[in-house]
Length: 271
Length: 276
Image (cartoon, rainbow over all chains, first blue to last red; front, side, top):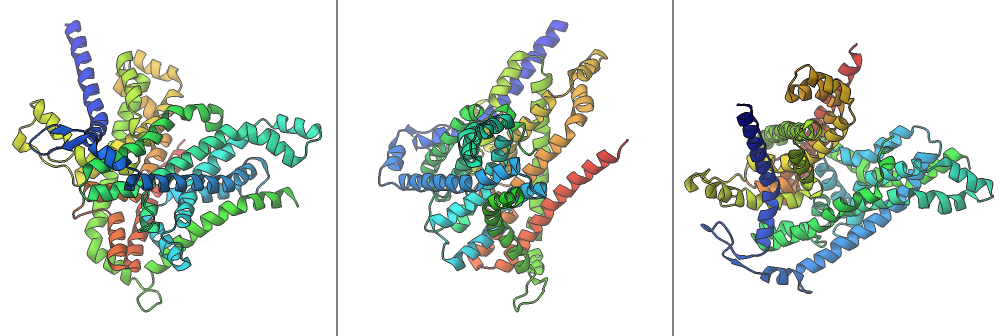
């Protein structure tokens, strides 16, 4: 009787796990199928003809996708530059220097992530329109940088806090100036955390849709906007291929993040 | 220069960016929502917002609350199995699988679901092939159900990740004691483990709540028709009519909804601190 029960339990666990795997992987499998489906219509359960025609169309040097990929990557790189230029000094100040109302500053950097953002973006677009930077790469970079600042500031502060103070003091004792200590001791030791925050900001910028939708159109087309336009235009192949391109950095990131973001840094985030 | 002045100087550029691109537009949206067509204080925009979109306000709240509730249940099931599961195969497979949607952008999730949940999508086709569904019964899920499924699919790994971390750091002895006294694993999870990690679960859910309230791509791509979520209505008021007053009134309503979630969270925190 007991053996029957345990077999039944194992079977139930197997069925539940299979259902879970289907729910999780199914949507991604559907995406992959659409990217190689040249013809797929009802009542066929699988594509009628497979092929890479749409991949060639997307990766053609003159194709929209390559142009959008270029725009997306340059915006993401510029966003990382702006975000790190602002967050390395801010993170150092938050971690090392005496700052009145430090918690308030931490919360201010959190705010852009803690609010429903659509209403903010429509007003940013309106302000940018007045300044003449709506529909420019600069406008999109600024919006992405403000959005990414919470990651870069919070992680940079945690990374600087995790640097051993004695090493800085030792450098100062043998005569290094504060600036030299920062560039030869503190910054190299905090670098993995700072790089991790840069990767976060890069990915956020690459995936960002809502801000670009309001601030970038119609001149700036990033990959998410191309994906949206293709999907709404009924071109499922191009939309699926664009979606797969967007997945690559996310998956790489998931495989590599643990190398850059050490446990002792993670433990100090928000502290 | 004193260290304090240096610190303020170092932090100032970052603060300026947040002030210019978040605080200023936020004030702009508040002022615009409460200004009438002839200038001066007015609630006219809110009147119009409620007249046209009160159904969508309710729809948005129902979608977000339901999605959060289902996300919580799924995340507790996953994190609970990861920490208390006894079958190494199940735990290992689950650990390898559950994180996949975590870093997938919302717009990619929306595109996946747009094809997966369609009337002739892979989901219905698989059910028909397995004999679980008659071909004529196959229905499209690209409506409110699609939005909820996409949100739960996307947010569950995030909540489960935080929850599993919190559960793993609990004192095992209490949980083992519960098991030794004859409590089932489900009971140990619900009565012993969950109350201790409630703060983590609530923080993860409040963050998910605000995220779901801000997403534009999923409601636009997964369910195009009426009723729809407030983000889509705001985009429509701007793109079709350039009507900033009504759009900003809807924006203020989304702020209030997310403030509601934050207040519920804070009240729980205070009730807990007040308890003996």
